[in-house]
Length: 262
Image (cartoon, rainbow, N blue to C red; front, top):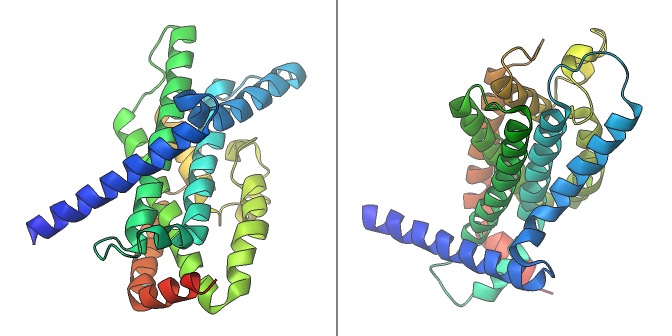
């Protein structure tokens, strides 16, 4: 059993290395090009915030607040969307029986996690140098929350993939509508503490908001997080992963056959 698990881990690592190498070759900026998109978004909105900021005191460093929000949102978006549309890529390895579609999806999630973890480290390192202090109060909690966000992304994306093959409108809704809805309700531009109390229940359904706010709180313990729950995020992580694994195991052949038809 341990040999089988070790072999599966090596397969995922090999696929992740191949995926990463392909991206670096396609990017005109090489390895740096993999980090450009999220960092550009953070820089643009940070500049905009500096230009229009009010005189009110910030709850935390704006670069940390925007960096945590945008990078964790991009992590979710990339992993979930790759899971939704990533089975077609597995057809390149269809002749290799040891490689299953889930292996390709896990490899993609691993690459995205490496990219966005690097982006977070760069933002935190930059703020730490600027403020001349370590900008992470609880690094252990920050790592755990990052992993929870990555696993939730994979679970939601894989669930949408399987259900979307049965009900195609679900895949379209997640890819188009839900992504835009999450963009405006995940706390990328705001803190939950600054939102009026009567509005908070309309936002707290979003697990990304809980993950992002908890991550900010791990960086700055004084950052207020009213209504935010770690248990809610864990329930989403375990629930989405559990459902997606059961659904995938029962529909794996259906996914392969339907993607192979075109």
